[in-house]
Length: 265
Ligand SMILES: [Ca+2]
Ligand SMILES: [Ca+2]
Image (cartoon, rainbow, N blue to C red; front, top):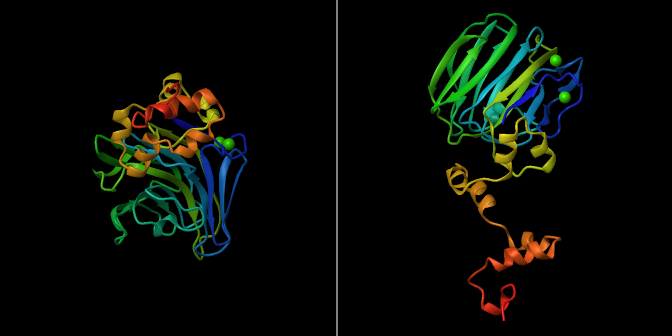
């Protein structure tokens, strides 16, 4: 599926985004953009995807305006936080405009180890866009059209949350903003609400979202996710409101004695 968000309706799309904020940081979708405000040093604020997505064919980018804050970041991470700096999570990549020294940075952290700077250099300026692309097992980082760094994808999974947020530091406080987010090639890695399926951009994405093949399920990198798709718990079956549907699922349990099966004698 693809996600585009120009923030023009001034209302958070709660099917895709959650707010992330820590310290006294706050975020507001207003003025047709995503405004991140950090009044105090070490504050942060922005959006994080509500769900993790399979990003093995990702192409994500977002416009930034980094005049005030320390930095504005586009970050992918195996784990989710809504109230702390994703920098402290164990596995991530990020590209960021860094207003404090007029640089752009590409960094990674794997396995909770020391974060590593993969590339840094003088930025093109405080505005423009940040882009992360994943293709064929390689991850690419762009500042506008400039390819800054690429390497073999090194995180333990390609099921990731996507973050866009600003960070404040002494002398670099106030409000900066994002605009025109897009993420192409993200695959659903969670159960979808009907409203999400109906809201999918194209009909192929809709139909794909409605059913996964066994090979797709087995290809999922996260075993918990695989299990969730493969198994219906007894409580889920018994909780179905439709008696016919419940009998159909119970009837699949071929190991049960005949008299427990649907229509069993
Ligand atoms: Ca919106
Ligand atoms: Ca906009």
